Image (cartoon, rainbow, N blue to C red; front, side, top):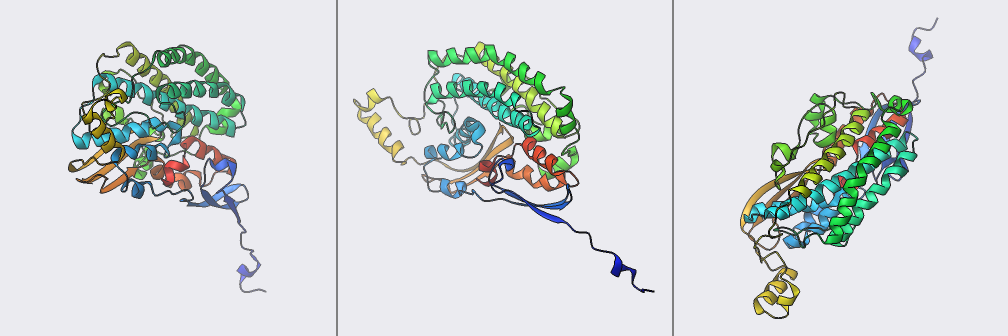
Length: 398
């Protein structure tokens, strides 16, 4: 008779699986070391920082107007929102009041960027469930948005659009034409995409109750944006702390109930419709007037004046060479980015560059909940959960 029965009981064997950093399913350069019991995830250890580019430290060595291109590279799926958020932060510091027309143009550009961001997220959720068709149908609309961006600022992905104090230029007739075309045809294409997935039994089985998180846990982690609203919390920076005249617009905030992959998909789907409504209102009620404030320290003078007037030439030189000082101060400004509250905490010591800049990146905050959200799930569900969270590596690492 054996006294210790545990000798005959074999230990449970687990498998360690590296998901990333270069696996195509990770949607970016980051790694999750999964402890697997067969197909079931027991625990997860995430690793980030593979594309950390020290944005905050870079900003401390650049003039204020040269920091906007850095913000492009955070959430590059909706770069103009990053640009506008930075411009508004500096405007708050210097006490600049942006003309109404420039604010409305900013709203149009930001909502177009939000739609482009959500198109990517929702269509990729479909791809990760095995439904490629929806991705191909809707992605053409993202191309139309990029054509508008290209007409407005000359760039498509990393836009560097807008300027401190307003916009660098007004919409051209061609830009209005492309915008009207998009507003007219997008609802039909969105409905087509929606009909492919919304009540698709395979899609529903793969997404409902996958990667859920409660409202309490989401708030504890600091969730914002679509991922928080999918969990049932009605919070949107555009409503709670309006900026750029968002208080002038009538729109709804879609809210989910279960905080699962399906709810996150649905919230973004409905937000695209609301963004389209905001764009239509801005086009209809577009004010007349200037497109930038009277801030010669930040806004390049017209070229014809640079060539003919000494004052304009001096301002051109000082702006390009980064020789403009700003007041001392400490400000925080947040906008509703594609993934949630995108905040800029700026400290100025009165010099030509920020003394300190901290970026509140939504991805960095809610990605911490990923191990909890996929614990006990299958590997295929972990991929879908990551897709629905819309983790953007550029914003995560910054």
